[in-house]
Length: 503
Image (cartoon, rainbow, N blue to C red; front, side):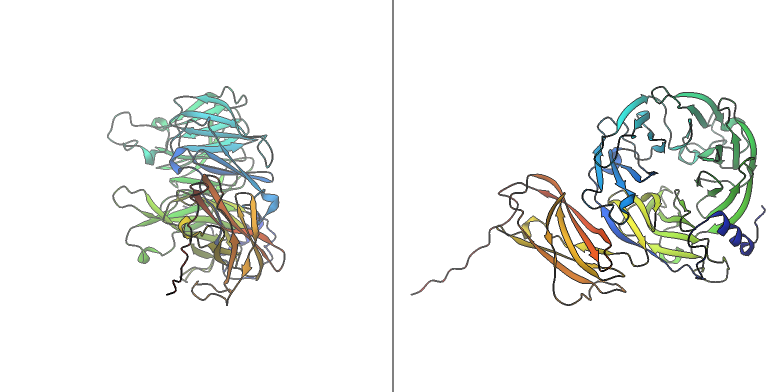
């Protein structure tokens, strides 16, 4: 395998990833990711496939039959009331969390146990309309989808098959199906690639670069010209096998497996693959009782010149991910010299929540992930505002008014905090007492509290949100808590009054 010099190719990467931070003088990746906001889940994770997609100044996140829409023009305010919307997609038939999802030109494509479903999101925006089901085609079951223009590709990965593709089991094969979706109401298969007659064996993932279809499998990776989708032709390849692909849709492609990721440049006119960087898993094994692996989803953060991957702990019985416990970020603007642990071009940041996380999506200095339990989490770099609502339940709310409290910190001192229930403000928070020393932090931790009266809150699910504003005027939600209220008369407790009896 041809692997170029890391030192020379660092300069090439800086050109390929044209970013405002190319002039940075730092010689070490020193900007860890930290949790800055959470949008708590409205429905259970298993109720649908999942995905996160950028569309102009909007971000769509699908999780648990709910589509959440964020306005990225309000960077830093994504989780504030009024800056996002949530739509329950009642027409979504899929109930398989492992299903595939893709997005292009305002349409969302979802494949699962219910078949291939296509939704029109062109009218979905803050204050706009909800998603509309365009078509549902049964018996089209894929876990990886990719789309370019009007060409959609889908595959059920070989690593998920109960038999070994190409092994001793007769007729154990899988295929990449290619669709024409120019009419979303009537998608049609125009071609199919079979692992039975392809040199790369069982197929695992699909991606598009410059309109070329890239397929990775257990024996290598191939690039196909699908200018005429009905007649795909193999134009290039590489013997690097992969279980997942990472693509920016243009000049960058990464082929990954459990322990390594090889990044390629892709020729715009030829589809040729040129190896660029080989990334290996961080040396975190000594901290874990179980084996670890690269998560099978990653992303190129072109705005900041880095490859964002995640690390999973593996269940030794099923060989499937048990939990995601860290980001493993490779900074292309740092010289890729070896001989140090941790490596100076690599930043490992631990995540919060005992769960598997999916769909990393960079937005400015932040990274969205979709958690099985936590919902949509947002991680930011370099001392972004973070904090908590220290909620102990309805039993702690005294009738007639009570305090809700918590803490907040950030690289810039926080000037004020405002508490919301759903979209209604509960007032500006008061800071009290000295800075807290029980919260591990490199910046001062301020304690806050606000008086509320929630006695008459209607029965049902409600969300408490804490929004901070720092001394520079930056505003963001740093904590949220979903709470079920029992309804008026059951939302609080009546304090016992002491009485004095005279004799």
